[in-house]
Image 1 (tube, rainbow, N blue to C red):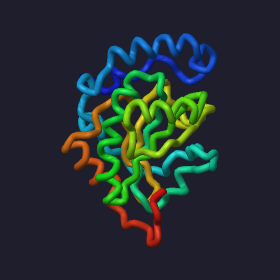
Image 2 (cartoon, rainbow, N blue to C red; image 1 turned 180 degrees about the horizontal axis):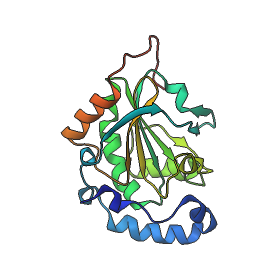
Image 3 (cartoon, rainbow, N blue to C red; image 1 turned 135 degrees about the vertical axis):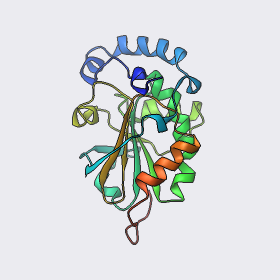
Image 4 (spheres, rainbow, N blue to C red; image 1 turned 180 degrees about the vertical axis):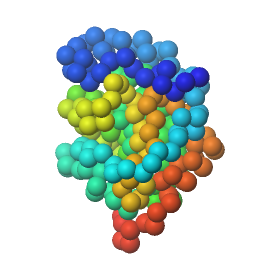
Length: 200
């Protein structure tokens, strides 16, 4: 089963142009995709030649402006997602399940929502889906998909503590598997942690 087969068909521009239609489509997608339907993320988690991480900008739930560079010194698993995206909804609990374990190795899971309604969409979603171990991070303008030249979401980036992109997965996957955890520790935990780093 291909991970890319779960990539939504709507690009960011068409989502913004037709939000109501996207929401209607997403209700169908949400009903059709479950975590059991998704492949093990390890199947698509191929390492790439290290390159500078993309310059993603986003906000926390209080509106504080952040960038990936602010997290230099930690390994990062960055997921671009939205509440209306069926595969995103299916895979997000698997990120929640591994966040604490990865955090003990100074690897942070950063889920960045591109929901246009921002915290008003994400906060109740977290509550209803019992997402307790992930921060609320927001990109309501959807600039991440342009920066990543992405035709759809979800997208997951793995970044090492030196600030280098070392892997990317386009499409939904189950991240809570032993093989995936081993790959994430290998890819995102290689470089030494910067002294004094405090996870946020």
